[in-house]
Image 1 (cartoon, rainbow, N blue to C red):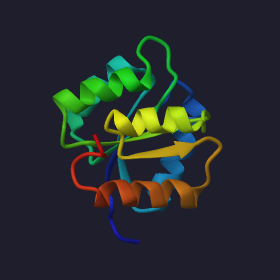
Image 2 (tube, helix red, strand yellow):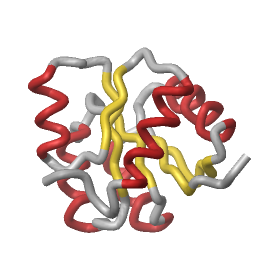
Image 3 (cartoon, rainbow, N blue to C red):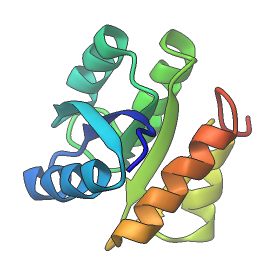
Image 4 (tube, rainbow, N blue to C red):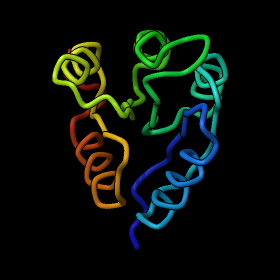
Amino acid sequence: MTFKGTALLVDDDASIRSLLRVILRSEGWAVVGEAPNGKQAIEQCKALNPDVVCLDMIMPGMSGLEVLEVLHEEVPESRVVMVSSDASMNTVCEALGHGAAGYIVKPFNAKRVGDTLVQAMSRGNRGVR
């Protein structure tokens, strides 16, 4: 298995973080941190500088889009892949329009997660903005 990069997992649901951790590790990613909310996500992203951030859209406190905006400004080299159960075209387009490098719809499988993260890495530093 080839090392693909480092990842930070952000979701208020510990079971989703656990599932993502297992999938990413099996796909060759090093999970360098996990956060249950936006505030901790921003702190960890600044401290750990992961290659990819898997970011939940709906969390208490700050929404995923609000966190995405902060990360775009303060840690622009990290690629952010949004994770959400909302598959509506408006929501996906909004996330990509705010700089997300990819979008994963819950429930997800290992192939979809792996493919999305590889695509995000191939897009350079940022998603389309």
